Length: 384
Image (tube, rainbow, N blue to C red; front, side, top):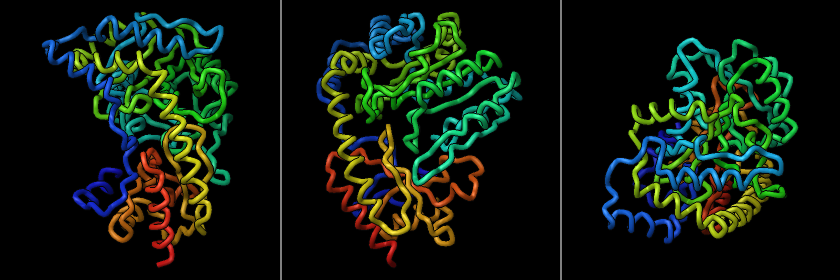
């Protein structure tokens, strides 16, 4: 659905585009230079299925360094380098899900996370977050009731795309304990872990890796895309039990063979320079959030609250008679207002009536003035 909206605005220079989940900043030059050097040195051949050893070790060190005190260290034997976070998630679902398996997912969520188990022939059950004054909340009782010994996999994305909702440490502990009892695997999409605006000792959102043991039935998907401004590079990774890693290497072979070496070199440079890139990015994203959300809150009939993490404002237009179908609303905004937003329907499976009329606005913009311009276009359109 997001692509449908974007296609309606392709080639139009007058459209302010906030539909895709990426910053409009280019990848930092030192990361690009590492890839250029790799190509100049002729690194154009296949790599190990699981990734270059030095890249796997750097990811393991990076991930371990983000953990809370007392967390289990992460060795490189638990790491698989993938061709993007999308690929990481699909590999995990392929590894864990067979046709007919029961999968539970928390929604609203990025649509790939509900499509992937369906592609594998799974029976999907969704537990919906509930909007309360623009903020989304999880009914823990409903989630735990949905996870039974028949549930093969639980899929969670936190910080969440599109809502910004984030699991608390206490909630993670309850979920992990319940899944240990039911024998359910957890697939945690934590690509927005570093893009978190609440104060924490390690500057990260709570991660299942902070509390899980190395042999727990937990797979965590991550990506270079968001925290390192590398969306177009297509580089990600998985953290899993060490016993699972060789089998994941086989799946990588059947899907992509390996991530390109020059892209992995860029990723290695990004990890080595993260103290410069990511904190500056997070500070700027917080400024963007704190610019956009108060402006949206001034619009009549708009329901929105600041996201705790991520790069999105997920807001509702309260006039359901006029704006209930968010896909059609988003298409109209492109044509009639020159404003490109993502439709909320894209993030929901069989959305309930109280979840209609939502739109996602990616606020990762170099120029915060563009955010204000977009709000004024929306304000004008709402008065038509």
